[in-house]
Image (cartoon, rainbow over all chains, first blue to last red; front, side, top):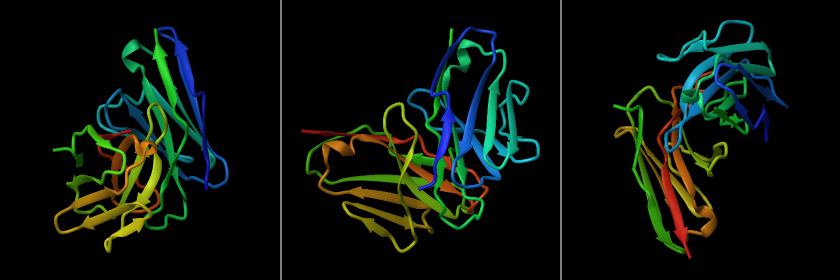
Length: 118
Length: 111
């Protein structure tokens, strides 16, 4: 099956620093990738939709200047958490669906990044 | 109201038991339906898509009722390895639309 690779799988950073998370689709092209965040015992919440070659679309309540998304190619999207604070500590996960867009197409997920801000 | 709502759980069942999970969705424009499984601290993995006619995959049976906006998952002959969180997932269409996740229902299968 299709593979989405996310890196790093975990990171610990100091408060005020920035962290970049990469998401790559390895064997298919993804014009759109989705970034989710999951707090403990909560559901995955969509943060933003990353569109190749254009600006990302952010969900309500998600600060676009804090969570910078770049989708420079059909296989790579990055999420940068800028000036991270302890409340940003969470499980961040990317997802992509095949650009052919067939109905009931499953989404493929990266392995997730566990961010801890100290 | 959340777009996807699931049984709160947790469900603690003995090996061999049959367990059913329910889910409702609020957006009538939803077109695609899935059950995903998520193990602790891992990414979600597709368990099965859900079709209007209902579908079965081994010990797992999924049902969809569009009129009631209701989805179910039945697990027969539970195994220890079935212990996980089961996520009910919908999307409005295919391709470039995001998936919307329920909060998940935790299942623990006990020996």
